[in-house]
Length: 197
Image 1 (tube, rainbow, N blue to C red):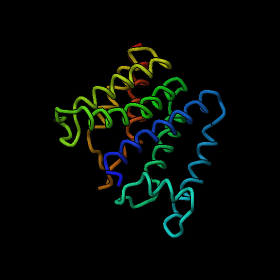
Image 2 (cartoon, rainbow, N blue to C red):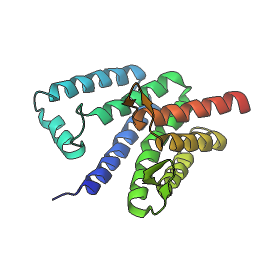
Image 3 (cartoon, rainbow, N blue to C red):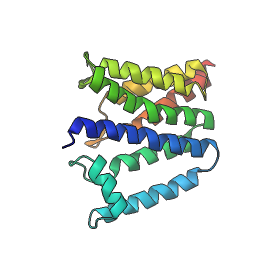
């Protein structure tokens, strides 16, 4: 029997693997925002169909990696794709790529390190650990430096990890960190570049 923590860690690893594939396809111009939009529409359609019918490959991933409380099958993946698409459309390519790499690595690394090594509860969210957020910040900063300056990478990763740790609600709907992280990182890097550099 597989426990919940193992499934959560496997889900985070899948998050990283899918993110790396998408990032490489974007970097090498094999995946455009238009392609991402159509992929998002296709994924959304499959998600809605999955409410009524079991689609073999889709159902395998949903049963293996989705939580039981999810109201829309594949919701995390859909929001992950939407976060990447919005980031690519809103920011210059280097900032968008840095934001995406922060999304791909910081959030899962913070979760994995927090669950396995975390000891100190985070004051903004008692369910999370400071050690996880520090690890996510460091990894995100270092990887974002492949696309932007160290100042921008550090600022974007720091703000992304701060936003990841708070719950943001709009009209009683909790916003997902797959949207919040890349948008917070991208906005921060864009503003720092625009006004401080």
